[in-house]
Length: 330
Image 1 (cartoon, rainbow, N blue to C red):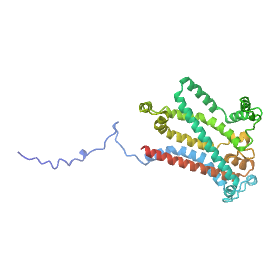
Image 2: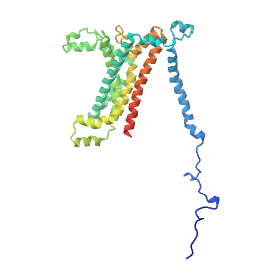
Image 3: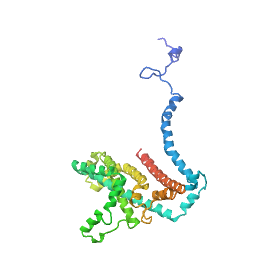
Image 4: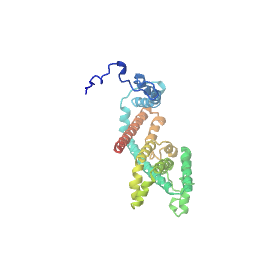
């Protein structure tokens, strides 16, 4: 039997028989992306990035530059540029009143956020258990509270807690608490902040409740059925099923609430303008008093930078927790 030499069969002698590049499904040859194709996504994002930098970056830069100037009413009207370095920061950081206001702002924000998030979570869990009719009535009531303008809601609360004509004092007196006859809820800074905090909580609950309710109804029902089969109690079911699913969403809404409540100004100013005797003054009100009321715009800009730094630190902590949670879920 004659042997056949196949050593040359593996190497094509005709260049046209070389393997060709795979074609796309539509029949067109596949091409490598050029430099323009790689840069196209960035070119499409460039207008939005420029707009964001202009609308957000430029004001932040302007405030930062102003914080290093002495910009009072005299310099503003004359157009003078007087650089003072870190004098504005030294002025506010060496003032014991500033640290008292900063501590008051942090404590007030933490208390309001804790109460509002807890109340929103409880209402969200409640909406899963009640009937459809009651749930719709509750949701409509929360939407009306959420849609109420800030100044209108503040005015209503002022009338509710009014010393002479407030419905709260009259109700408490009729219930037998005679000590609330003519009781002033705005006599001290602590009680004033308590009323303002109640107003903020009342307006924050709808957003928190709806957000957490949306996350709660997304939890698979078979997990609750499995917990019921295992004989878990309501608290054990919440810890094993509800809490792990709602924790990322709860972290997000808590972070947003911290940002919003830290910057609250309208309710505090409209209620008592930071009074009595500055007892309800927070950092946003202090910034307004320094900048608009006393025309110390450089000092007010320094206060703004300090507030932005605190919020940036808070944002960094949130992002770090978010990255850790994402890495843990992978």
